[in-house]
Length: 122
Image (cartoon, rainbow, N blue to C red):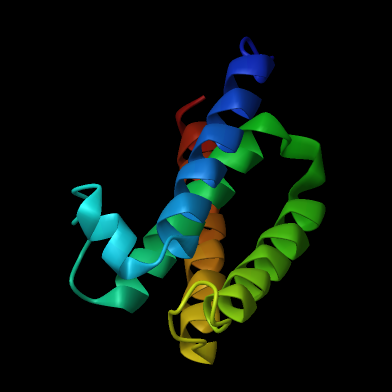
């Protein structure tokens, strides 16, 4: 039984907006606004961001995991393409997209383990 589906979905969209802002603002603009968050290893930032999106999205739409996986993978690819434009002025890096997908997979594995533990405890 889900108690707070609206809050879960709002949480997902809030997380998505934060990820998009951090991914699509030019680096110099982020520093102007005082943002120096995350790890200094860019791939870890990507993986954690997309793992968080997968987990929060799965809470909001538990019956649509496959659609969420595909949508997040496509969003990661779109972010990379946009980062490669002169407007954003960041680097297009296929390994960043791979890190996004690894983050999604790690979130799925963690959720599977958590579900298994909950079922065993019940």
